[in-house]
Length: 98
Length: 371
Image (cartoon, rainbow over all chains, first blue to last red; front, side, top):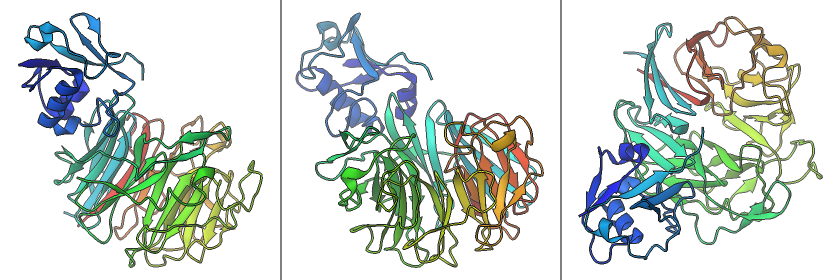
């Protein structure tokens, strides 16, 4: 079970409280986790990554295990602790005023 | 109950303001979508319980919401605004070329003719259509792919398609306006488009007779006389009596030709409302006086409407989508300001009172007449 923490605005869109838990088939990567997230919560499509190019939106970051994974390749494996469910995959709205 | 529902989009959420037909006592509901920019909300003319909202954010992109119970509850619908084919390039402010890139939905126009059809005007400028209540969106790409497309360039707010007007009896006939490309018309449901900017005079463009490059801020019409169009541009207030084929200036005695919104009275096709704003960079009311101007003669002769509006030290703006009229027997007029006030007049503009004073900056105001 993969644990995902969403920013507050996206929890509201997805109508969830707290962490999201996802079953991910095959390799656990940014792409497979986000595919599973969007399949479970279609309202999140386009809010984390572009719907056409699948590129991460520029004001969104991905953290896990105290590391910034935002610039990792989408198909790179996520840390073992995320795969085991010991640590969550964090989707973060970049710090910016307004 | 006969009454009105005013739909307000702001920089930090949406609000729904309701009143009975007297339009004196108001209930304020919201914020919906708190913290998000809501560029526009609009109700279906065929089903007033159905309302669409454009919810957008620099962080999380575009969300479209739909209510089927008059704004009490909302559900997300489709938000995939992928351009048709290879998007191509348009001009940037300095004349260099830049790829078309979707940013947000500026305007949602539920159809007059079909309850499931809704149009979306977006930035970078394009027109999308949904025939299933917003679930799926398809670009009417003949507009963006018009021969003049590579010449289009943004206005200060971005290259946005902000106005969509449907002909009241011919569903295939639409008018749109783009800042700062100009106005366009289709007579075949959006397959082909014609620029309709003859007569516009736009300072600081090299060729005043250019087909495009005109900063149109807003267009409106009266449904009983759809060949007569009224337009507020960056430079003038304009009128067309031939469906946009030609335009002539009707700014007349306005204290400033510049402004954003323009609205036609719901029962008097020659009565028009504008809010003059000081140009170019100030973007606040002349002399610090917030005045709506009304012409009862289709323009040229304008009277200031001030009763109930601040007449000193007022430096707010009124944006292009932030004025609307209801269709009650005595026409109500509504507008919102960047200072967060929403004003209502229940008597065609003769007197005004604030519905609310302290919302976030108002981006759009629409009104539904409930019977």
